[in-house]
Image (cartoon, rainbow, N blue to C red):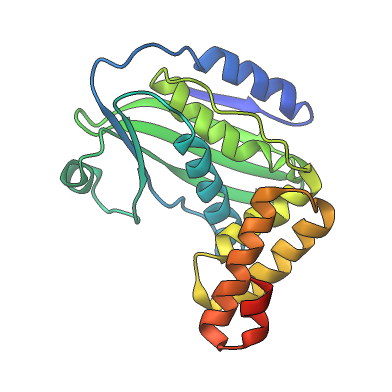
Length: 220
């Protein structure tokens, strides 16, 4: 079944309902391995989409259940062949698009053994609530597989979008300057955030790696 959740203007309330409905943990009878494919998106939103998936992965790695394994892999043309080859039992894939005033995320979880789609959701968020997207995606996975829910995110919401964009830029050496710009802005908005500080240090090191400028090595 396909469910459409309108997450604006009361995104947090809708997400709370979604998490409550989906997250019903129980012991695993078989090992589970979930792989995340890069989401389809426009070139303008590529960094945002990549950052969202990096953060989704961070949240999923915090789920502690015996027999649970999480991994990310490149885009695949064939779930049937590639997922089975890599040993993933399930895959998360989708799209992310942004137009004026709304970010639309479509995500589905597929059982690679049967190729059955076990969850298919469309979610809409105002840009101000971008911090809810990774948690929603992680919740779709944990809810579909009845794993424990992911922890809350304490980061300043205004800083979070810059943080997410920075994570996306960090995946590409050619975007070191963009990563630094985004993460320095996030650090200004939330100077006490440990994830922001760690990501910014990584961005400085990436810049040092590509430029050999000792200034960035010192900052890192």
